Image (cartoon, rainbow, N blue to C red; front, side, top):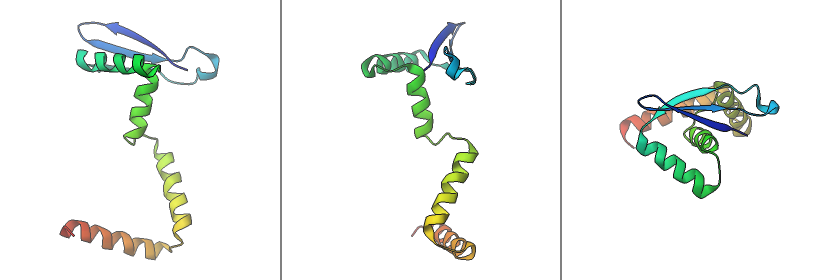
Length: 104
């Protein structure tokens, strides 16, 4: 899994890194958080018995932060199940966009 290393230089810096060989291909990420957010994350980690890195990763995924390839796969699967031609799908998209803009 993840190991969370924290350095403080006038603010809170976080560095998520992978300690095991199976995760060696995972890049490192440094972010800055307020003391309040850091405290809340630390408390949530203790309550849930999960690492802060796991909570951050899950939160990003829930907010839709995913690679574009994942979005393309989702769209491709949806198109396959929708049984619409490209022209029909475009017509639906235009109609829905117009309805949204009109406030309906």
